Image (tube, rainbow, N blue to C red):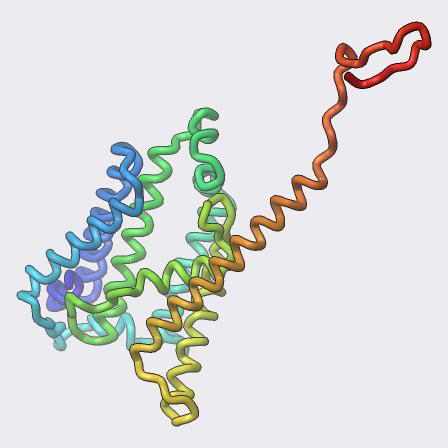
Length: 271
């Protein structure tokens, strides 16, 4: 909705507007989670409802058309060297996130917090500030995604992208990120998103040619079932790994003071 409202000023003002608004929403989420210690699920659910309500207020409950006399739609429909511009945006976001996670102190802090937040705090690492920056970064990326969607449909629909958060969760989990945190890669999330998109597009393709007969509503069911199966597999693999680590753990040595001498024979025995 923000991108559509600012589309009359051109592409770059619209891009700046969605970055600022996305960062602001991420800042609110990060501040509430990090400093107020409110559970992330509650915070993000509340802001999701609030932002959708604001979108309905701004649009009056109807779809708004983007301005057609500028370069606003080129961010989705344009290309460079024969490659669509959204591909470049995806590559830049992927490289930036990979560099931050794998080659910076900030990325190591993120993985440490996901593994054990309390232990990370006891080590003196900036837990609250790191979590705040993660939410801000996430908000910026969400704003850019909203801009691409507005440029694709050439409109702003307050009810657009409802339920897409499940797609994001499914893609990340398929990519190998643990729900408990502490383990995950940006490359795995990219592969998970591509795999999930491939499955859904294949279903649409086969349905269009009449090879299968499923309504569009079944896509939501398939996403949910697919996500459930992946989570169950992830939990099972995690439990098996913990069981193997427990069986391979060596027995601790017996302290000398608990070994008792068995009378005059001098034989040692355990109590």
